[in-house]
Structure formats: structure tokens, C-alpha cells
Image (cartoon, rainbow, N blue to C red; front, side):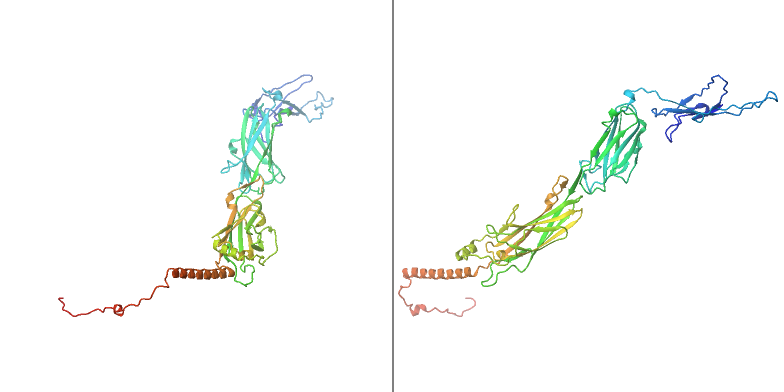
Length: 515
């Protein structure tokens, strides 16, 4: 009977057999033959030796022996006998194969030699962002997933880390892979969440051991900080009881934030204008030259600025009066749209009760400069709200505003000069995911100056001249009266003698040089 004996036939692919036969070198197969007689048990021993580097002691060792009959030569005793019968093997369901197996004996601390895997971890960021607790979309291109795997039970066989990576994050590599007993592969790249499967350890993870891994993930495609992505980590092995699986799973949230920086600046053309009452009889209307404001908003931060707004406030009345100082002619914006409380265009002067005495007092006592500015939610100001939408990093928006001065401003005589403080404030959407950098750059101040022509009103001029004449005549009469009382006009006239009035002529005499 010829046979072939093989050991560890059901081992893992691409691995060596855990036992070998020394009689045939280091092969896991050996051949032999045996003679079997009726009703006799025949045994033949083949010692198998275990290799030194065996780590898989969980899987059973399967042994198979296949056998078949060799060629038998039988001779007749005499010519009259039938030919001798050839031996045959009994037909079996299995094809002449004998199978057996044995297992490794282990010294275990847990029931059924169960492992106890525990997963912990956190999300970190590479330098120079290592101190931040959130991921800045548009700025941070990578992140680190630090995972610790602790085996608090017996040896864990065929340990695998299953990591679900959400949309927007992509697996790059495992850091320090040469020193770690881990091998990873992405199962479904086109399906989200993507599944990363990592086999840990060389066949098994030692009992009471801890392994630390750092996974480098690509986050460059994250441009919106909407819902925070979750990374799910699950550790499995072949020999862990079901009641120890509670701490095998871990969910880590990656907090997303916008870091924005809005820069606002603006200018006005012309920067100043002349105002004051016109000459008597001239028509009163709006200023012919328009006042043009231009404001620029630039998103200079690393992230997109969500739902950006621009608020422009312009002083538009002299309290306590509410007469409008400016008419809004046109508003243009390169992105988004602007709105304001519209009111009808008015270029006619408001009716005023002429008070000559008040005008004279105002002319002599008006302040040198009057500062005009807006308070928060000031009803006396022109408030313009512009919705610029989402502004990507590096994007710029421009708002142009065209105004004209109304007669209420043109005919104003209450100050020698005016200074209008126009404020433009850029701001993003207010929510917990937006972090504003350099808030002082979000406000732009533009100053418009008005200079009075210093010409009084006609009736004020007439009153001043008339009053001056009257006062001059009165002073002249008063001075004359005082001189008359002092006798200035009553002194007698005394003629001057003719001889004294003559001037003595100079006498010129000739003399020597020595004199």
C-alpha cells in the first residue's frame, strides 16, 4: 500500500507549513509504503517537527494521508487453477484519503482564551497647526488619525482594524510603517464612507500589549464647514467573546471651522464740496455734481466667508430735523444685491420761517466744524445693506453708490464746515463655525467734507450794512456833542502875527578851508 502524508494542508495562503518532516529535508510531505496482512494492524511512524517561527497557534493543524495500491505480482500454482485475484481497495465516499487534525495547547488567562481589544484615539493636525482643536477648511490639507489598540486579554488572532472614512477625507498612508506590524488597503474607494481595512500584528497581537498607529488623511477637498464628519473605528479578532465587544468601536468627530478675514476699504469722489445759501432770487435745487462712493470687500482669509454682508451707514439728517441731506441715485454691486429704505427724490427746499435776527446770530456764532456720524440703528442715517453671498478666499466685491446733496444740505448755514463719517462694515454669517480674524480690518471709514462759502444771506448783509451805518452816524453825533460840550467849537480865533510867521532863512557865508 503506497501512501503520501501531508501536514498543515489547510494553512493560510502564501505561508509556510508550521510542521515539516526531517526525513525529507524541510518538506511538509512524505511518501512511504506498508504491507498489510489480513486481520493485522500495521502502524508506521513519521515524526513531524514544528518550525521555530510559528505564531499562528489558533488555527488547527490538518493532516491528510492519501493512499493507493501498488502493483502486485501473483503466480499460479498449476495450470488448471484460475488466475489469482488482484487486491482492490474498498470504495469510499472520500477518495482514498484519511484526514485528521490536532490543535495547540495554550495557557490562557481568560475564559476560552478570549482576547479583549480596546480602541482609543483622537484627531490631531500636523505642524504648524498642531495646537488647534479644529480643522480649518481651505487651509489645512492633511490631518492625523491617532489610534491606540490595547489587548487586555489573551493573544488576539487575525486582528483587523476597520476604519470608515467619510466623504471629503482620503487615506494617504500609515506613518512609520516600517516599525509597525500593520498592513492597510482601501476596499471601496468610490463608495462613501470609504472602508479602510488594516490587519494588525504578525498573525496575532500579544496579550497585555498596546499598539499605536498614526494614519495620515488628505483633507484638501473639504471646502465647506457644514456637518462635522465622523470617523468610525472598529477592532475585530477571531477569538474575542461577544460580551467583550463594547469597547471595540470608537467614533471620532472632526470639527470643521471657517477662518475668515474680510478687508473693507473705500473712497469718495469728490472728497469735499461747497455749501451755503445762494444769492437772493436764484433757484434752489440739488447739487449739480454727484457724490460717488466706492467700497471694496476682499476675502483675504484661508477659508470661504459664508453669507458675507456689507452695511453702509451715512449721516442723512441734522437733528432734531429729519430733512434728508442726500438723495440716492443709484447703487451697483459686482456680486449679490443691495437694499435700503427708499424715499422719493426731493430737490425742493423746505419751507422755513425767515427770522432775520436768528440768521444774524447764526452768522456770527456758528461753530467752526460740525462732525456728523451714525449711531447703532440710527434712524437719521441712510442705511444700505448688501448681501454679497459666499466669498471664496481671494474674491473681491465692489459696491458703488451715487448720491446727490439736497437743498437741505446745500442751503445749510449752521456751521463753517461739515465732516461726514461714512462707515462700511463687512461681516460674515454669525454662527459657531465661523472664526473671524482681524476684525478691525472689517470696518472702513470714508470722510466727506463740506466747506461753507462764508457768504451771508442777502437780508443779513443789508441788516449788517444798515446797522453799521446807523451805529456810525450815532457815534459821529455823539462825538460831536461831546466836543461841543467841551467848548471845542466856542474857542475865539486869534490871528498869528505876520513877523513870527516868517521863517528865518539860512545864511550861507563863504570862508577859508582852514576855518
